[in-house]
Amino acid sequence: MTHQPIIRFGRLCAVLALLLVLPFVAPNYVVHVANFVLIMTLPVIGLGFITGFTGRVSLSQGAIFGVGAYVTALLTTKLGWSPLATFVPAVLGAITVGTALGGPAMRLAGLYFVMATIGIQQIVWIVLLNAVEFTGGPQGVRSIPAVGVNGFEIDSTFSFYFLALAMATASYILAKRIIASRMGLRLRAISDDELASSAVAINVTWNKVLALVLCSGWAGAGGFLYAHYVRYIHPDMFTLEPSILLLTMSMFGGYRSLEGMLVATAILESATEYLRPFGEFRMIAYGMLLLLGMMFFPRGILSLFPRRAPKPAQVVKERTSDA
Image 1 (cartoon, rainbow, N blue to C red):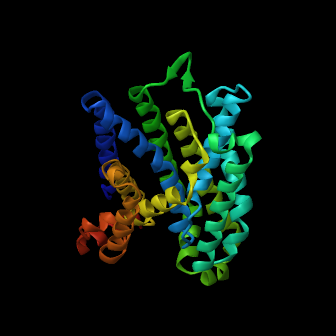
Image 2 (image 1 turned 90 degrees about the horizontal axis):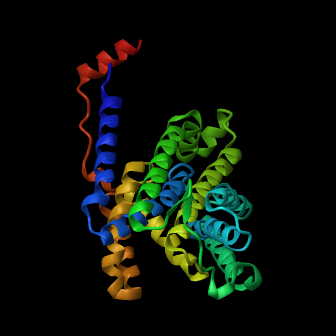
Image 3 (image 1 turned 60 degrees about the vertical axis):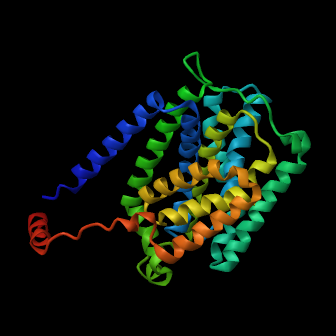
């Protein structure tokens, strides 16, 4: 009997314990940065369903992230909805836009798919910028209310940290279960060989669209958190730049490694704060990180710490016990 699940569970509990202690011992600015890290883990995890399990590179995740933010912002400011009541509409809105625009592009591959996602990114940004009566145009949406739970408003950096941590943890656990399910096996098979997958009765097109739905849903959930944390959004927050950053985090972490994506998100999102004095030149730094990452550890940052292979006797023992 293997002890790997117990070890993984113990590691998860240890990491969660450290994260729960962080806001009590760290300065407020560090907690503020940690909030952005936790928020960005959601669209990065979602992007993993496309990049890791369909073999496609998407540059429209920032736009779908923005759709979720705008849906919750408009429902709360213009229609007076409770912030919590807008979570499902924000996710569904992101899924609707992401699937409607990205669904036809899933038939493409390689550079053609990348160009299609850039087009999706620009379409969403132009709509947000020019639909002035609906989205506020360049002025954006102001005075977005804080999330409230039983009369308590989560309007401080400290309190929001626990909401973001809870959602990030739930997203991670749910994504792990999906990847370990039969659906995850089908997605991995499609990524490895689409022709062979279709030969064994896997509906390739349907599963690609399903991966797109998951990708968009995670982005919409992240957009919900983002809008209610920054409390003010405008179209320039959701240009091509955040899509590039999200893709960098996904690639730097490893397409099929959720843990690697989380580590990469923490490193790169935190580094953003230190690169701000360089202005637009920080994108050069991100480009260099992406290039170096693909050159030296294409399987993700966690490949720097290779797992120790089990001993042959242990493998035989485990197979015997399973039989």
